[in-house]
Image (cartoon, rainbow, N blue to C red; front, top):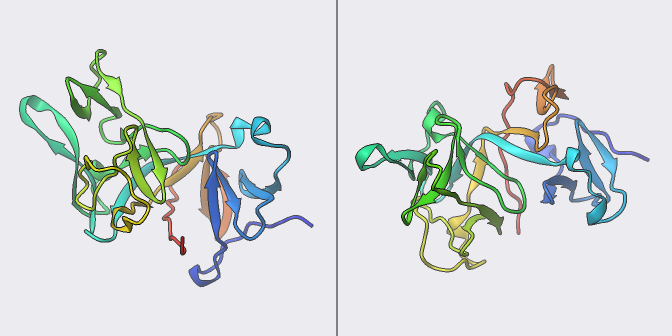
Length: 213
């Protein structure tokens, strides 16, 4: 028997986990989200269809401990850095494209620039001499390639990642859930008339609600 994907109230929501940029049913881990329906997982890692992978677009990245979100911060000489401010649902500067699994970049939705390293500075730039930096999720924390997490104040720590440092948990809010490899048509998961559909627009937004680790 197959699984249906339907819209329900929060207290009836089904749990998912992520693996290789896929949403997989926690209760039925042989099924994953393909477009707006659940399909049986066939084969192993080498058989994963990249067209069934997901990414997160135009997200607010929020820390429940500090109440802060990632935000653009101005520096000297017109430089723009990643920092934090109190959550503002209307702020375009608090919107970023990030990944779901593996290594991914942080791109400002407002600037349409990736965060990159140039002369030991991490900032948003299109400087061709800068190196785009990559991050990953680990235990709901955002970790640099050197294994350092972002703190509740949205500062990249110099300390190593520790599983027990749950204060560093980051939660994607008001995100677009989109295909990693878009086909330029119906690439976004959406809600229309209380039904889950695929859409060419990113009018719907999704927020992660975590269960117990």
